[in-house]
Image: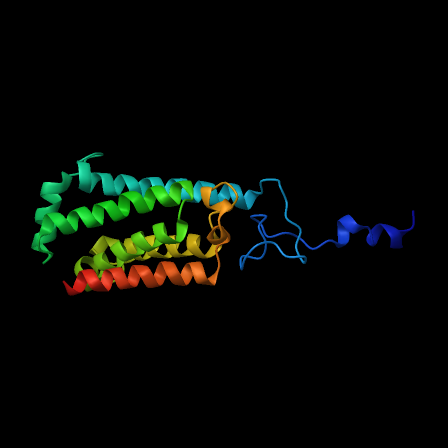
Length: 198
């Protein structure tokens, strides 16, 4: 077999598939990409990121809602929210806790990923606006560092998509993309703005 035939072999000249095996991120796989049925390192990396980040955020919400993992529970968290100007405090504590709990679980399993990301983004915008924004960047000074990191990770997962190892792989929005990222950021921002205006 000549060198020319080896270099022109179909296996070497085929376009490479998107790391999640679902196309370019703008929609379903096209004729220009080859979908792969195998799980990639990118899929496993996204799963690890989603599980770690999502379950920790869900646990953070459970601290507020149920007093689990050393949390204060809804009544005490509500008093803290009331001190920040959210009235009734218990209602807003429940909204924040539920957003973190279900947003975190949604990202962990890769279910309704843009909506789950929006829930976390909205809570973090509120946290930055009412608690940490006045203290600068670094968390050691009470600043926005922590909230910015959560917001960016949630937005990135919406943009990239949850990967093949997610429930959303069966749905159109499961590939990620600009519309999904815009939805997550836009809905999170609108939800935060409404909450802050009440």
